[in-house]
Amino acid sequence: MFVEESNPMPRPYVICHMMSPLDGRLIVNDWAEATGHSVDELVKIYDGLHEKIGADAWLSGRATGEEFADAVDRPYQATGTAARPIHIANPDAGEFAVIVDKDGRLRWDKSDIEGAHLVVLTGSDVDDAYLAGLTQAGVSYIVSEKDGVDLKNALDLLGTEFGVKRLMLEGGAQTNGHFLKAGLVDEVSLVIFPAIGGKSNTPAIFEGGEDGLAGRARLTFISAEAAGLGSVHLRYRVGRP
Image (cartoon, rainbow, N blue to C red; front, side):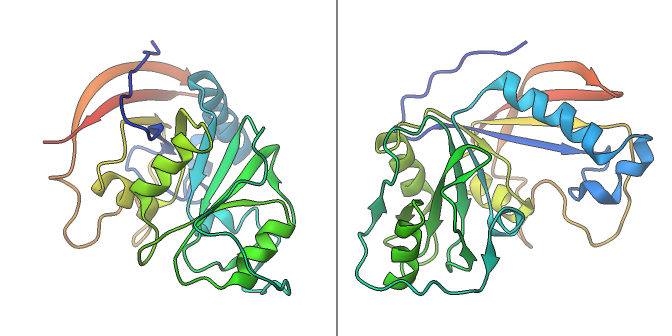
């Protein structure tokens, strides 16, 4: 069952959509073999649910962004000033791939990821050469006016300036943890596969540092259904305790 939601806030409705084995480990390559299926087969189930739920943007952190970037730690050679705090390179885009990269470490020579227009969320101390390089590549960006990346303000701008209504959070453990701690996750969508990873010192779906996240969210059950290859798809509404 897929429910409709109302969101009176200017920011998008945020769904944290992830996949894991029974013990919640995040790195798929560490546990996929235990299911008897390939990583590609598992990801196909996960992606199918992504499409079924529907969103006009997805967001990941820098580590995940490295899988799609053209280079890491290779500076742009662009010159000139650049617009701050926001640059919209493609106002007609209908789908967005949002990458959090506060230090501007990833170099993009393309303006999309698999057809979704690229938007970079970055920190206030990035230089104009980096922003000019993004502009020349046709990439949109939002520069934080505070230290680090102001996630709440960035989401507000994605809603008001880019027209994003629903955003699928598909970040790493720390990115997911930051969003949850900031009260910016509205729903958790989790695909649990029949496997146990059990590998020590590997990230879980959410990481909240030494303080943890136990007091940050109250989950309300929405639905559960079989999702293929022995997996179960769980959905929970997220509220504040």
